[in-house]
Length: 407
Image 1 (cartoon, rainbow, N blue to C red):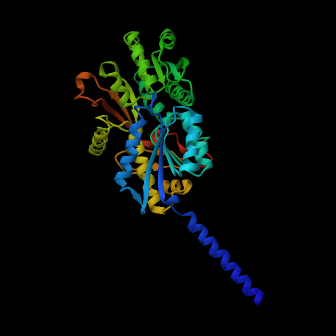
Image 2: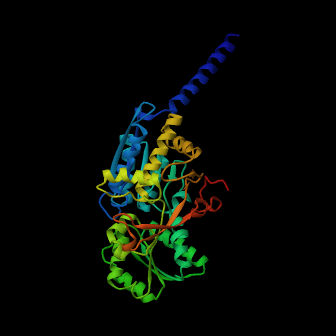
Image 3: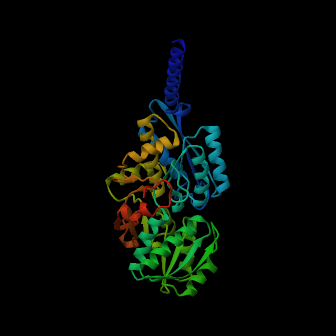
């Protein structure tokens, strides 16, 4: 009988300990929620991401109320310099030494893939707004990751298909020589060929190029209808400026900026950028809610309107904070699991959902850059040509190679 009572007491203690352990796990760590905004602060992606993404994250924290269930919210930021080793080292230090609970933004696909390995290993949420490669939600997917704003598949089915439909049947690609550029070329080439077009050639250029003359001459000599720019940021604007000086468009070839941002159009000016077709996940002048956010953002950014990356950072951070509040837990998988259960309804996305593979599904927009005479003034740059439903914009879940995807 004594042994039986001891066994019961022992079982009760084990059960009580299990309950306590579970309760201890479900909590906000270090009595604070720390958000790390990791991006390019000084290079070719600084305008589309950079300080604007930090401002967007802070706006989300402020709008949320500054605390989660009585715990403070802090925002840190750092420059990954578009280098995977720098990005992964910052992520590891943030998590191990500074107690960062979620990393956001991270443009440059090679850096995002490196950070993905760290956050997956460390059970830290990673909400990417700036990178484009679909590898993040395919072979490299993780239960702690959400791809928020856009990807190379969405860009290809938007801009690529539209340009082919307009008669651009033969293509030559100028491709940034890293993960993003190669994936964007691959995805767009598949769309071009599926819609009856052909790819006649391509050339790779280094990241952050200043001289595109030799690459543009190869593209010009190819005789292709379309020169597809599988690059972004400063690389895109430099290529377009130099193509304009070479008279390439005037000679009958069309430029397709496969990833363009409103900051690129502003840098180019409407005289040069007019007529460009782009795919975007956000346009500041789409409705009253987007205008309200953009006006508040511009007040903090010397008049600059937000890019889709910066708007996506705000939306992702806000949704994350709502999830943490709901479960009182800032653990990576726990928070992302909760985020997947909650629909996204804000100025960025209506009825957005997060799939098992980490892809946030929402509408995308095919836009055309206005002619100078059609613009009401600075930042009035886009005409929305078409809304692309989220179900069409992103790779179908049944085609995902993510191990988390339910086929």
